[in-house]
Length: 295
Image (cartoon, rainbow, N blue to C red; front, top):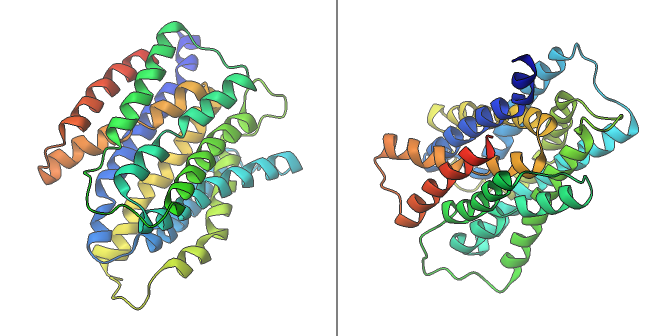
């Protein structure tokens, strides 16, 4: 019984991450619609990462991994994730969201390929079916209603591919750094700390990208609600770090990418928004995928 519970540790953390990121996704538009730019939302997220990272260090009694390998891998993973988010802001400013999101959402493919080829991760036939279904569901869940925006040139496409690669690499490096099979395995808490450091380092870029000539809501419905909502994202990352340490990246990362299922459900309850049939199809496939992956 005890061994079985330990083996399912990754699943518990994965489900917690999916729930937190799903709620975050449903609420994130509240401060943005109230006049608090997404770029400043990034800064709010970076701030919320600080207490989360400190709590993580407290859990391991402040024994941060400080060897060169840990620092290099931790900062690399952090810069890839945070840098990808900032590039995404620029990408959405010049390109069509209905194409950008499906491209970027497939980043688990990069993680899966690297994890299979380099880390030699394996999965059962049932899990592989779940992984394939998850990738299909991810594309469908990323569906955006087409509009008249076709983008300017092909820069947006290049930026989309760059984010796709960066996020896939981030998840792979996190697994490589904290792999339990490696004698130099990093603690998940240390990974979280270095992501916090990376997010703070890139915050000035987020400020530079912000148009301060426009009115910005610094009140509760703007800045303060952003801090509260972004805290869900920050806490979710700590659980993600645990999930990817104790589980297989080829299973954990696709499952994490199904968080939009929770977003759609919560949005339906709060905003009474009926999702597009394509998204509903994606949700059905996602539920089947989660069932198969949680073997």
